[in-house]
Structure formats: C-alpha cells, structure tokens
Amino acid sequence: MISLTRSEAKLVLKELKSWMKPEKVSSSLATFPSSAEIVSEPLGVVLVISAWNYPILLSLNPLIGAIVAGNAVVLKPSEISPATSSLLATLIHEYLDNSAIRVVEGAVAETTALLEQKWDKIMYTGNGKVGRIVMSAAAKHLTPVILELGGKCPVIIDSDINLEVATRRIVVGKWGSNNGQACIAPDYIITEKSNAPKVVESFKSTLEKFYGKDPFESKDLSRIVNSNHFARLSNMLDDEKVCDKIVHGGQRDEKHLMIAPTLIQDAPMDSLVMSDEIFGPLLPIISVDKIDESFELINSRAKPLAAYLFTSDKKLEEKFVKSISAGGLLVNDTCLHLTISSLPFGGVGDSGIGAYHGKFSFDIFSHKKAVLRRSFGGDLSARYPPYTPRKQQF
Ligand code: NAD
Image (tube, rainbow, N blue to C red; front, top):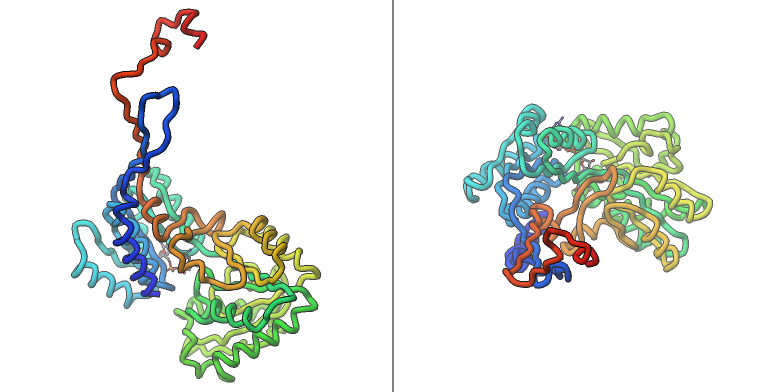
C-alpha cells in the first residue's frame, strides 16, 4: 500500500504543472469579444481525519492532494493504529514544511475539538456513523466535506465462468490484504442456487491452498485490529441466525485476535452479517434463483463503495454497469480499480461524498474560479437603458 502513496507522489510531480494551468473554455456570443477560463485556487486550510486500516495510505494520499492544490493541512491520523500515528507525527514534523502541514494525534476528544474549528474543507475516512458527526460539525461553518466511507461490497458470481480464476481473485481481495478489514473488500457473494455448491467448494480449496489447513499458522493473514473489532465480528458469528450456516472456518483465537477465513452459506438478510458492513474475514454466500435477481438485491440496499461481477456474458456486464450504482464497479476482478489513478475513488449515497486520487484529488481540494475577460470594445447599445421599444426588439 505504501507503493500506492509513492506512485501518487510521482504522478503529482509529473503532472502538477499541467493540472494547475488555467483551463480555457468557450464563451458566448452575448459576451463577444471575450475569453473565459477556469482558474484553480487553493481553498485554504484542510482538515484530514484518517482511518486505521491503511494508516499511511489514507493519511498521505489525501495530504498529497490537499498540499499540491496549494492548501495547508492538519492531519489527524487514527488512534487505533497508534504506532503509525506517532510515526507520521514524528516524520512529518521532521521532514515536511511545518508552516503548511501539522499532525494532531488523538482520539474522539481531540477530533471533536478539531471539528469545532472553522476549516476550508474536511476530508474524513471511516465509518458512516462518524461521517454524519463530521458533516454536522462542518455544516455549522458551511465547510464542504469529502466523506470516504464504507458499506457492503457485493460480488455477483455468474455460472458460466472460469471459477478457479474468479475465486482466487475474490480470495485475495477479501483476505489477502488486512484479512477483510478493507473498505473495498468483497463483503458478500451472490450466485445462483445451482451454482452455490461449486462456489463454496472452490473457495474452500483456494483458501486451503493460500493459507494452509490451519490458517492460524499462515504468515499471510492479518490479525483483527483490536478486541472491540474482535468482539464485533464474534457477535456476527454467534448470531443464532447464522451459527448453523458456517460451512468453512469459524475458528477464533481471542488471545491473538485471529479469526479464520469463514464462509457462511445462505445467511438470512436480517442476520447481523447481512445487515452491517462486515469489515473482517467472514464471507456470506447468498443464493438467488436467477442471476438477474442479484441486481434487485443490490439495488434494494444502501449504495456500496464497490461492486464486483464475474461473468463471461457481455449482456450481463452491460446490465451491471448500467443498473448498479456504487462508488466503483469492477468486472472479473476485485479491488484493483483502487490502483488506477485516472479513475476517481470515492463513494455514492451511504458510501460517501466526493472522490479523489490523481487529478481528482487536485480538483476536489481546489476552488474552480470562473474568470471572464473582456476588452473595452464590442459594446451593444441594446444592453443599456433607456430600453426603448426598438432596443427591446433585440
Ligand atoms: P477509525 O476508528 O480509525 O475512525 C476514523 C477516524 O474517525 C479516526 O481518526 C477517529 O479518531 C475518528 N473518530 C472516531 N470516532 C469519532 C467521533 N465520535 N467524532 C469524531 N471523530 C471520530 O476507523 P473506522 O471508522 O473503524 O474505519 C472503518 C470504516 O471506514 C469502514 O466502514 C470502512 O469501510 C471505512 N473506510 C473507508 C475507506 C474509503 O476510502 N472509502 C477507507 C478505509 C476505511
């Protein structure tokens, strides 16, 4: 993930001059002769509140965008990843311009105090509950916000596909980075009833291939970040609506904060695991009679940050792109859209407000100032009073 921050910095160094240039746009006949342009200017001072799960990426990438757009930044890293928070505070103080960038460490009390101040923009990454607190605080000062939130990212698996490739791409997107504690990690699978047994078997064998018979022995699975999140995920597993539906995994080790990759087949829609964002190593597999029903199911719920489809059917692919509203869509893979800096990254509806990465970051941290230039010639007398009947004909 640090490599994504490095490549963002490299991209900015290469492209910033061209992004900063005023953009010439067409003017109208009514203003002839004139020239019109859009000039990007800094907003002022930006507050960046970041989350724990990718503490460097989610702190430095917004910071890069805000700084290159000419703003000053106060960064508040997450207290849930305290070592990274303190490292960022130390290194930013030591190596970056302290007149433009400051780090304030702390938890709820400190963030609440920061939110009482007037900022020119606030960028928050984290859950929607706190997102609402941030937006309410910002409203008091009429401060615009960028909210990078989460949600339940669905994966539709069609029947006639290369299931082995699909499964390994889903497994790496779900468990490969942070053991499911990622905002765009696949949250649940939807597949046709007749296909579900094959899907489950494919997941089981891929999980065993990647993480061994005893996943707790694997060096490639992360722990759950803390005991609060461990308890939250344990509640989902202990929910009586799903405890007899666990078809793989389910092991927990509270002392070491480990939960094994877990498959839950046909979890009811009102179970905890299907109500809240999972943000952990549990994966429900939902069956539908016909694959088309997946679209209704997804559209009946909050708009996700990402949605994934595995198919070889071009018509289904088109329907997916046209009918699913999500922050981002990916066909036949998971998570990789995050790495493309020419694509905007952000949510829609409950999954967030505003998008960033690459030039989208520069734009969202800038004010786009409308500038129209005229000379002293080209005046039409019809513009000026007195508005005689003759002038009114124009
Ligand atoms: P978190 O606990 O680190 O909280 C995020 C920030 O909010 C922290 O800096 C924290 O200090 C602050 N905060 C917490 N409570 C607060 C309060 N009451 N008032 C003010 N500030 C407060 O992170 P989290 O919320 O556990 O992160 C997980 C969520 O974030 C998931 O929903 C995930 O999908 C989402 N997420 C989204 C993205 C994205 O880019 N869209 C990236 C990562 C995580």
